[in-house]
Length: 191
Picture: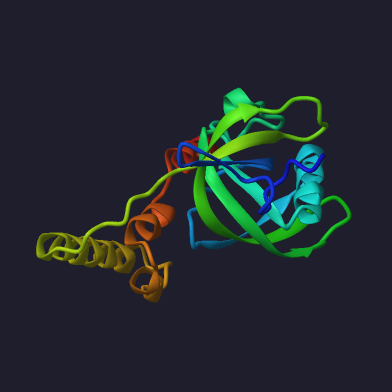
């Protein structure tokens, strides 16, 4: 029985859309909708999940790990919210890793864990994101956030400013480029 995300098995229940997808935990990386990313996969469970996702419409559920040093995370060690992503391209730079190019499509949350597979698999629920009504106040606040973040980018001098102004969601664009607490902890340990 095909339980994966396609037109036949997306279940509409009380305006909630659910799908069963293979889960790929990410270390030190958070993916947002409309964000293109590349990352390497080397863990056997993640490689198996990627292979299943490629066979089922190139869709996977990308979710950040809570502890980036955990080599074999369980569902309890993952964030509950992640993103459904389309896998765009795969490259095999070494015999044991695969480089994945993917694009975030939609936020989703883990609804239930599906056991019995050698890879991580979960029933995910799309997160409803209401459209923001345009208002003068909202536009002014968005402009202020972009300007402050532009100043931040100029100070750290490693992110192209065009990315902020072309992003469909300035909130996600800013959040994806801010240093995470996990990265800060890792840098402190190296010293």
